[in-house]
Amino acid sequence: MTAEIIAKGVCYQYAQDKSLALIDINLAINKGEFVAIIGPNGSGKSTLAKLLNGIFAPTKGEIYVDGLNTANQEDIWKVRQKAGMVFQNPDNQIVATVVEEDVAFGPENLGIQPAEIRNRVRQALEAVELTEYAHKAPHLLSGGQKQRVAIAGILAMKPQCIILDEPTAMLDPVGRKEVIKTVKKLNREEGKTIVLITHFMDEAVMADRVLVMSKGRLVMEGTPRQVFSRVEKLKSIGLDVPQVTELAHQLKRAGVEIRPDLLTVEEMVDFLCQLL
Amino acid sequence: MSIVVRNLTHIYMPGTPFESIAIKDINWEIADGEFWGLIGHTGSGKSTLIQHLNGLLKPTSGEIIIDGENLHARGARMKEIRQKVGLVFQYPEHQLFEETVERDVAFGPKNMGLPEDEVAKRVKEAIELVGLPYDAVKDKSPFELSGGQMRRVAIAGVLAMNPEVLILDEPTAGLDPLGRDEIIEEIVALRKKRNITVILVSHSMEDIARLVDKIAVMHRGKMIKQGSSREIFRDYRGLTSVGLGIPQITELMMKLREKGKDVACDILTVEEARTEILKAIRRKGSA
Image 1: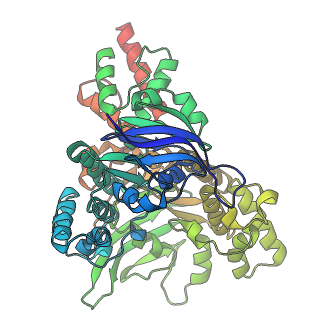
Image 2 (image 1 turned 120 degrees about the vertical axis):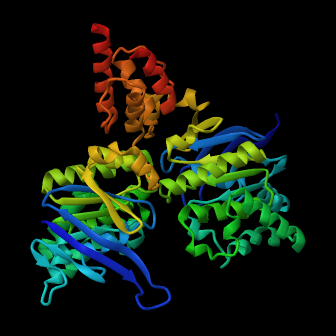
Image 3 (image 1 turned 30 degrees about the horizontal axis):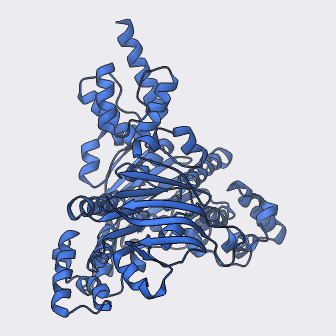
């Protein structure tokens, strides 16, 4: 597999701050990989996301997206076209008064031919399952639908990678499910590389790999199983684990012989059925 | 302080082409000191309902009775009642506006016309009640604080009015797990200290399960269910059919039960689940 995004010794300092927001970040995200980034507020997750598609340039070190250096101003539009970004608040990302026009905004700005734009908008809306809403006004949609419109807008620019910065933080359970289902589908069926920043551990569990950030550093990484089995460590940096993992941890401490890396309800049910 | 909602209906923009029924025929009784969770997916009418409880919205029909007094009767003391029912909106930190934390929290009690020393006393109390160090934060700009801290300052602004009922709309949305736990612990501490009535609106079934005593479920403008947390979360299928869920831990116990295992399934927290499973293991061991 080839790496799609590479960070080498990346540091970032906001102009008004004395301390570094990111300290010596090294990572490689492969093509088609689904990576989740978790960490407490202020740990540098969102800053990192903004560096990955060139909204900020590193103070020190380098970031490459598909071989392009994000600090190179001449390539910045190519970088952003390759790595599209979806933000937390759906209401801040919608620019047009009709869904299909909103989705067309990105490709229009890339100077794409009208016929091709139509094509892309149709495909993007199909991918997020909002075809029947093409002519609706975005403000009448639910939070989850709006966030899917935002994703469609990114898709229409044909990126290889989609970075999502807490896309479900403002949504209700149904909206969260819709968005996560869409993200998974884009990864599995369309082969998009996904970088998902989230506070919800049950979302991080679905990734191929989880990166944990704390105080500007990358402090842990591994498969969800490897990461979430370290309950004490995660709690010490102010993070949660899924309830099922917490239960496994507590049962183990009570002397029950149990794998500490159970992640889902189904796994726990299977395990307990053998025991009880 | 008790609240009775009787046959409450609210229609937005009645008599226009945009007319829509937001909530319909709601009946709800909240006794003094109770802790309620209000759940329902976006657009189910939760926000419309809670805005009636302190008179921000006027019912199209039906009534709100607070401590025996009809909120919309002629001559009702609306202003006093409003001060007794504190409403913390979603993302309340967006409503901070003063130059210092102290002045922001003082805004409410000042407008109540309280004497200065009383305002100062309440501001200090409220800031400490939400777990912030008064001396360290009082002269700071609220905008220098972290997201979780800003939210606590906003909540302090409501608490400084000494409400007897506190309504919180999604108080933990967008916070990290630590920030979430801090807010939750403060709500618990607050109830102990002041014994106030609390209504918590939340999408987090885990938070609802570990905090509240009773739950009201909204769906398409109607209140479709009310009961104790255990009763409500027992109805997994019913809740999922209206776009809601149950805590992961409750789901686990239900599935064990479905597989014929002898465990209680009205479990709300990880600790309860652990105790229940350990009991089952022991039973099996001694059988």
